Image (cartoon, rainbow, N blue to C red; front, side, top):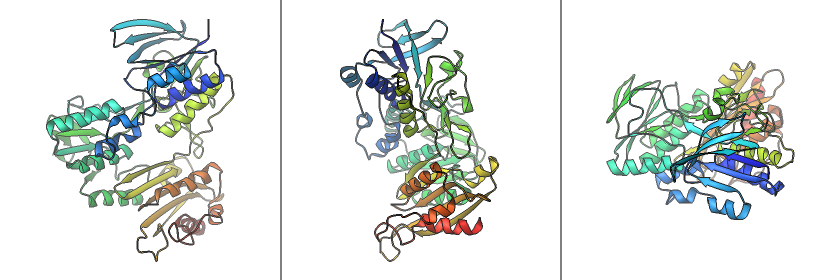
Length: 445
């Protein structure tokens, strides 16, 4: 019989792994089990459907299950949920929800690609109908349907991270009054406080009420109880982050690591022979801190899935890790960060310095030159770049890719100053804001 590879999870990591394995080995029997009704969709696009920028959730689907069946001979089974994993017997217990039956499926190689799940705080009322997490297309559809049904006018978003900010903007554009509740001292904890304050100010300018340093204590059908008093809410959106959906495998004996994500080596192999893991359920390695991290991003999931699939197909590939790059947008304000902020650098034992500058996205003499703030973090003694943060108008955020490249290459702050970056007045001043920030930080170092 042909060697069977079973992929558990049909989104970015899982289908990347299955596709890469098929490209390299025509003889494999590849089965992909997905408990939902869709595969290969962009969860990152959900806020933009909610906001009305995209006409339907269908447009978030990159490939249909039938395409994988027809073009790649991958046996994709939708609404098939794995209930248990038997590592010794090399079998899965699978529930077919469409036909109401449970069966056992054997495997030779197993790929864990179960993704992540919204963190649901252990608070009274968190399971009420008006409290919604947003991780899958089905979650997004349920949120929009409920908001339309109750004609939501008051929305509370719990958490001031990337998901929280994007959903807050989406709901205010739907005409609701929105309050964001963040337990930390500022929104976007990945940023240092002064940069987070800039983001909060932009949110408040578009009418989003932001309460920082406030704890959520529970939920009732029409309100959210907080340490600052009750808040009226027709709908609650959980923007409290994403946890690895790894319990199915850790309960079976696959070792977990940071935040419960599955432990993997550079080839995406777990410590269990024949078991691989990729995507939001798996660990990553941070190239700056040199520590394992959990980074639930579609970019990481696709890359890890590709690596796992190449190795499954008999090739050799490694995933070198991440530097923690992310971007987002709140109306016209763009935000990007990569590497470590100043507080994180201190936590990891670096003697760090930081510098922040303000400049313009384009040449300052152009009438439409928007503003940009850049903050860079570097290590004393070595002068090594440790991280960067950018907050600004249109054209600001993608400059963080230069920082990500520099971090990946292990460059010094001084090296940024001499980079031969492109210049023309519609795109930058003669000295790019990144280089202005590097000059300011170099003086401190």
